[in-house]
Length: 206
Image (cartoon, rainbow, N blue to C red; front, top):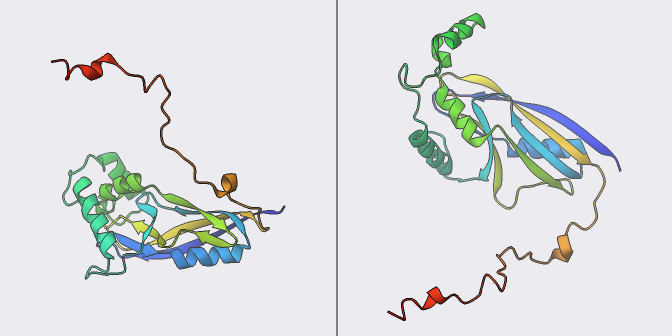
């Protein structure tokens, strides 16, 4: 059985004045088709620490901020948990040493380090997602879309998304577990756990 690894980089441009949601579903599916992998996994990973990858339903309706309704609902919740960085010293980060480091690596200004909200939101959502490939197709269910989210809103900037496809170029046998029987995960009580206890009658004996 041949095992294959296939990698591509997707270049994106974020707008900067508000978190940017990039729907990269089409591109990821195209990369999977290019790979020739029939069965395996595809990992979609951010190259940046203020960005996330998430799998979610497409909300279809788009508002005047060019965000799908579900995306803006998510952003509203994140703003309550992690408020937008609006003023100096709102967060501990960045400190004076980090600001100096930004100058050392030729950042355009101290303001580019005032993206603590983006870093914290990225921690909540994580920087990657792994999806299953079945018979050459990304198995995302009926409604799943793949989004690259840039939480950093201090400036517009180019971004990179890494896609790694791994798996076999051959077909696999029947995937059904135990012949496709529904697995019962409900708790099973022992006879000892179900035994009568005298305390059950306390209310009746008053």
